[in-house]
Length: 204
Length: 399
Image (tube, rainbow over the protein chains, first blue to last red):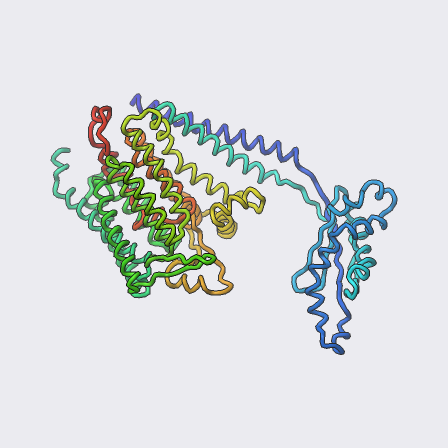
């Protein structure tokens, strides 16, 4: 009975160690998540880059599929500093002071919708209005600059402008995931402590 | 008790277990090899049920168990039956029945039977495959031809070699010399040249220092004892960290390097976890592998997307169910812990090596590969004669 009692006591001790380490890990990662947490706003604007479809009838070239193949190139162009530099010129002077063209370049991102001629530009910023203005400026810059960068490219037709209403709010990192990771890592550390303690005190 | 020890019923139970073990090992081996299109696999599966019935007879009719044990065993068996139905995979029920039915059985005898049966089958299959009677499947890796030597896949051939080697270490633990290790290293190089089974070959090389330290420890060397005493914790930590890494996997640089080391298994495990999630009691997962004659056709198909959960631990939590998975890992830990407590270290080292092997490969619950978990309830005779151990008695029977 005495042996049984001490066994269950040891077992209880180990469970407590694991739980404490889990809690410590969880709390630590919670703190880290809060410390790192940032809220961003993302604004989007789409554009169609194509040749008019009727031109296709008179030529052997299939402009439409050629346009489709060019979408990735356009997507790379819009992420290039040349567009962010031009976009900066369209911004109000207050914002020009605040954001360099490099800043704008790092905020911009673009996406091509599969099997379409639609290119979407997005800007991620810490305020709604900045995200909206930079998105619209970048779209405008693309429209004016593309013909000189890629001669023969299709016409850029901008779709609905980005508005404050349509911005998405994104908060990263996710606290829940961080806490779960903290709990799991803490549990691992707790297990290692228990295993080493058990080996040290009884097995060697 | 003494009368019971020599009781006829117990002897019958033991013999039934040995026969069933050989019978089921042969069937499992046939399923894992390229004999399959010649032998209908459905029929072999049906024959395997016979083994399960025999084990149930041993557990419920021939073993003397108290009520507590019967209830415990029945609960685990019910879990295994649920998992078998949900995952549509007989391996789990067969394997769990073998673990629970091993009462009073001599573990050393099981390993002997395993070593002889699988050894003969493997050697025979290799020879037959070279005579082209069974398909020696060849897989290309860059310009290298990987031969499967009649087994389902080259890595499986490597895994058979690995587990047979572990059985060899267990049986000849007392008599291993530098010559044995040299031969192992030489055979490892040959194996790599034929199959390029990287995981098994690396681990076979790793067995040499690990078993050597365990051997020194069991002979009383203090430093080796200090090292070998930590062996038992590797299996549960490997299981936990495999699961954790698969869950945390993202395409960042560190994970990419790790993924490459584990030959893409981490990414696949993550994909499987995201698609199917952890199940408590087991679930069916549709897999497309490259193993077997059917898989070989897939290998040379364009646009074939490989999806197979390779890690044993991931298979446990995704396919067979978390509860049984935890029980199996506890079973591994208990065997290794007991071996450490008895200061003989052979099983602790073997379970540690299996624990490492299972991070990448799927053979933890394959009867024809791994009979080492049957040590949980079987009678494990002491391997080494040690003064300290002699005091506490020669045999250790766990109950």
